[in-house]
Length: 212
Image: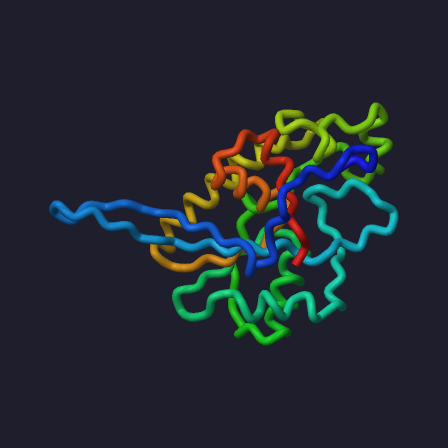
């Protein structure tokens, strides 16, 4: 939120032990309708190291994984077993966060990359400061732009919602009735929460997402 605006955000989502989303499939066996639950556990990557406060969006950035105690709750809380499948985005910061969780005691796992879970691409703004990218100031009380605004050669938040929804549907069908852990980004988790809560995209921008 802007410093000049009162903080009206609801309680933040994420770290893995705070948020999981249940996705239901319905199928019919004779006259009995049964529900199969596929559980998603979302983890936002570790804090980005960004001393110059540049706009980075989908660009890869280093992350600070030195505070090992930050990852221990996720290592304890995330589900384990053969029916648990891990996903990450294509950026290194999600991989380093996954590895930090493993170092804190989670069993070694393999994970699958999916570009649909990448952070919002901010196009020509990436590498600039926010003052350079938006010299007229921010356009939304909880984010820099409205949900529909698409930066030059970039994506809008509504674009992110569409691709995240497609990715979730794909993996839910692939791992039906199992658990999925996805190490992703603030914009991705905000998009999924917007879908799950049935919120309008501009309202969804008010959802805060903490780093792991």
